[in-house]
Image 1 (cartoon, helix red, strand yellow):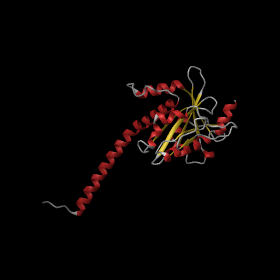
Image 2: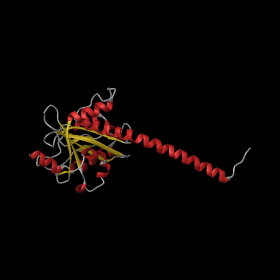
Image 3: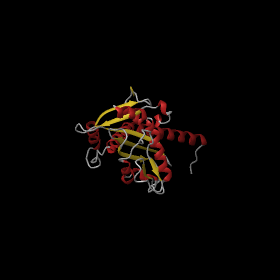
Image 4: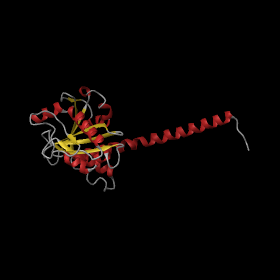
Length: 243
């Protein structure tokens, strides 16, 4: 049996590892544009889902074209505001893609993206993204508000690694639908956000929805995410609502 010196084994291993690393880097570089495009399409689809659009996305042959067309048709405006409710010079979509970085900043220093939905000249809906941390990883969502900037029109949520059948239920329709019709401000105009209640929400309470049975930690994390992210829009919501 032929034997090899330690030097030969070391050099051979080094060359092999280098070749594999170069190949992986090349593949990653080639796939990066496709991955970035898929992320953009997914984000656009989620914005549309929050207002009840893009229903046929999984049925069409060219999903990317369909989502881009729907987004261009229904999202009639987008911009970024600061904590004081003032518009700033930034791209809403790019800020949304970098939301994980924004939420690490103090609320007063964040940029807040807004997407405006309108159909056939009807009342506008305002879609804002939210992002936070669940039990096992990131959670995020998109909340669409009526023209009063108080009443929730629709909400969609998703996660990276919550427990199937428990925390992962935040991505299901049964959990998301009850958000519609709930309000962010009380009768005195104070921002209270939405409470996710363990054991069942009070049906008469306009600020409560049911938590997930067995998924309390994720439910409360989502509650904290919504409150933390939407609080930064408070000044803007009040300004638009009074105009």
